[in-house]
Length: 243
Image (cartoon, rainbow, N blue to C red; front, side, top):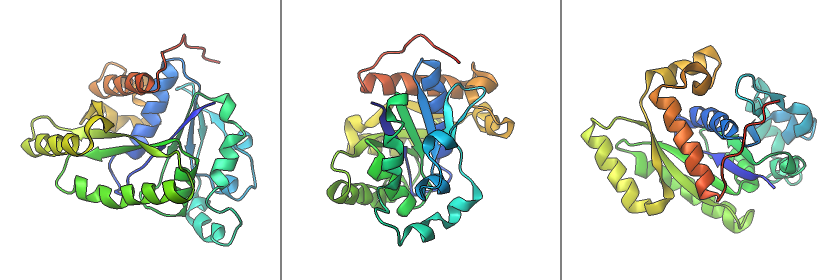
């Protein structure tokens, strides 16, 4: 059975997609079977299955369910449907045995699409910048996770908070990082993702940073995150099997 992680933060521009793509690639590099899912309109409406929608990432050696433009209207269409909160969970259950990890890249809003992801997820990974409003911005997200836990998914929890775009030269960043650790303790990942030009350039080439420049600081940081993710799950890296 796979571990299903939602990667979420209500704030845009905090590295959710960067984290989703590069964690997926790094876990695959460590021999894990990985599915990276954007929240696809046709799957939510039961028009196609996950097995039909997924494609193989090259390079990267993991499966991807890409989003499309129709996703913007999905919430309107979902409102009047039965089991509207549980549709993604049902769809993913059909392929759960195919993967070790399923990562879901959530939109930067706490809407019905995000609720679907939380209902399906075992845990939530929260990327966040160490800036002035970082802790304040977590309030609504944590409240939503608690509501989903009470009403839809009693097993969901916060997997961890990931400090991203981190500049160790910034006094403010260090102060906010310390505050995050005080508030959340061991929920904060040891791994820190630095600001890195090569990491920022990789998406414009359509590549995870491992394939773009595996020696850069960003690539090494996401490999460390993948290793930490495996340790937290009590798993070990396997020999890579790239088909």
